[in-house]
Amino acid sequence: MSEIKRIRVNNRFSEAVVHGGIVYISGQVDLSAARTARQQTKNVLAIIDELLAEAGTDKSRLLRAFVYLANIGDLQDMNKEWEAWVVPGSTPARTVAQCELSSPAFLVQVSAEAAL
Image 1: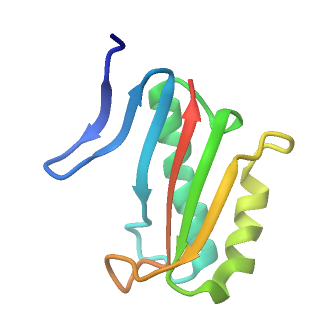
Image 2: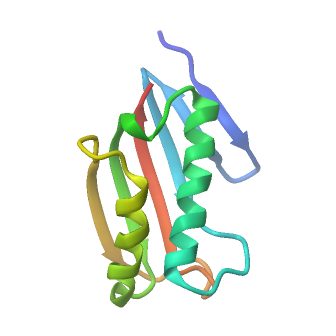
Image 3: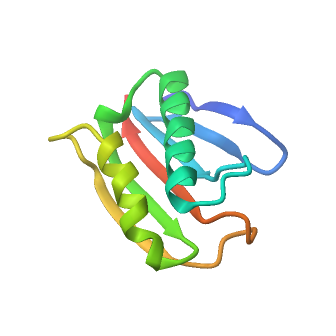
């Protein structure tokens, strides 16, 4: 049976879980005071880079991503940061949806899965 590794564990969830050669990253939000979806996207993607590195992989190994926007009107700005961040030719399967996030301050939330 393969081992389960949990990264940045708190009372409610783990920021990432590694199992069976896959890294599962929980929904990441920007806890800074960034006011635009574009800046929040950039900050969230940096957090995902850190979590992937802690797990022993990187964004070139992304399999799937889920992007949640508080306002779908921010899609173009989010995509500008996304396209600058992803590895050309290694883009993951992706879902984008508009939904109410856990705080009005959060404009973008991203979760992802990557191979080790």
